Image (cartoon, rainbow, N blue to C red; front, side, top):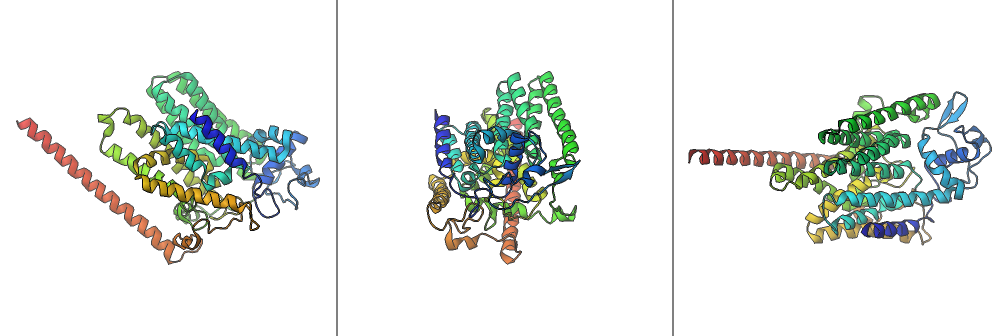
Length: 466
């Protein structure tokens, strides 16, 4: 019943944002019109050639201006770098109720993803921490903004979170249905977008390895073959339709020159968390608890708590899997994705929506172990940002999700967050302080671990002598 209540609460809140446009005068912005136009092509022509849709302005009912393509002609077909999987997914809803029905589909799916995230959180903490922690992040500004954004990341969040649940379930009960269901969800993941492959590979590795550990060799072999076959088929279809192994080949985006261009993007790893406009911690301070969860995992393994409490081993495995998923997708978004750090296609944090349920589960673990005052303060600031954004929807100052007031909800205190688009002294100092803090922390922990090992060795020697 907790899961049902959480889903209903999230759907109710998300549906309240349906009237907020992407930007002034436009209900949809960024890549949303291109996804909708692909669905229109499937519904009306049953093909992926968008040339006639652009020629006939099939987007006029939900996009008032002229829409320019971001693709190119391949084999006499106009295709765009957004893939076919997401268009196939939203086509039924589009056929039933147009663009608005697709938004309803998105918010229902994102609510489901957070419910699955609550199920993941139960492997880390008991109730009510699991549901409360996930629900709080599900009501954060990035999640609320993503709920009605027509983006494949929402659907990918359901598949990735569900596959992670299946992988963890195999550790407890190695049933073939868990292996099959997890493999099917992972096989469908790349069809929603190439950027989800990294996080999917992490879960796929866990799924296959844990299946092998439980002596289900045939099931692991079939799952591995299904995943490899899906990737081969995916690359073959893309080469046929888009002229490359991913739909990205049909795009016009300019990528950085390797390897220097990608190395220069490393500071974006910090910018995605701390930037003054798009930083996740700036919009949802509650996510700081995910970093505390990483610290909890390290301390648990350092102190070898699993030897004392065997159930702790499952908690460590779940936390490690979730952190690896988040880290893999973070690298893709920060370093490998095309475009500037501050894009103009969606609300800040929407690019990370695929791992928001995983972050929510980690936050639930951290929420249980921090002082209640601190946890309540982080939750209050996060929900205050959401409330302010929803209140703005009822005011005359509405500018939309993409052009939202970036001082929300900090006001003049937003200057504390660095501006990573201009390398002034404060972003450099901020990164340097973070690096020094991490180095000092690792040094202290390594020293403490060495002292603990020496004390344990001395204790064993003393017992042997007596």
